[in-house]
Image 1 (cartoon, rainbow, N blue to C red):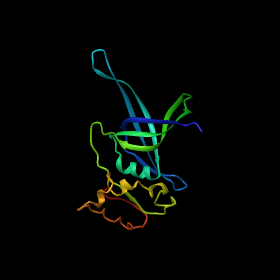
Image 2: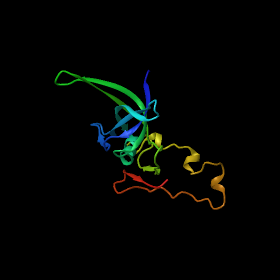
Image 3: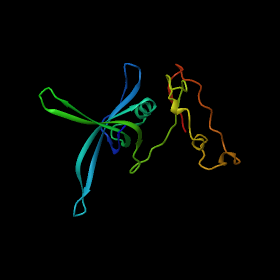
Image 4: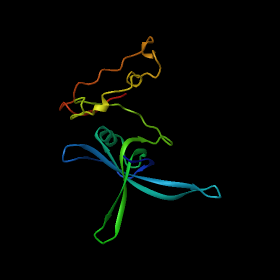
Length: 177
């Protein structure tokens, strides 16, 4: 199977929209503008063109993108690209570049952000409230350690236990990492 994977760096042009398919699949969409900057012979940077991308994020990535990304945020999007063309009612043709995102993050070149781990409730098989891939993790990351044996050092604290459920028993809650 041939797929075109792309990484786009740009800014979100409108607040993300959270949606649901008829089958109940949760997803979030937003648009990203990416402007190429070039240096002139005089050493001055100028805009050399802007491209716009429609981004779709599914399942847990969609929920997290909706909670994290806002209009104007600098982002990095990595995913599968598809170009769509259509004919308008006036007979002219239009096209768009769509990205099904595998990863979305803030671009930290000119700013900072704080990570919060999302706690999900649901089945480990990817049923309602959870994604199967979210149940497995890197033990060094899960333990909060980047060094072997750090958690065994005197004074090391265990992370607080995860919450059992929210009010309806299937929701999403943000807790500090």
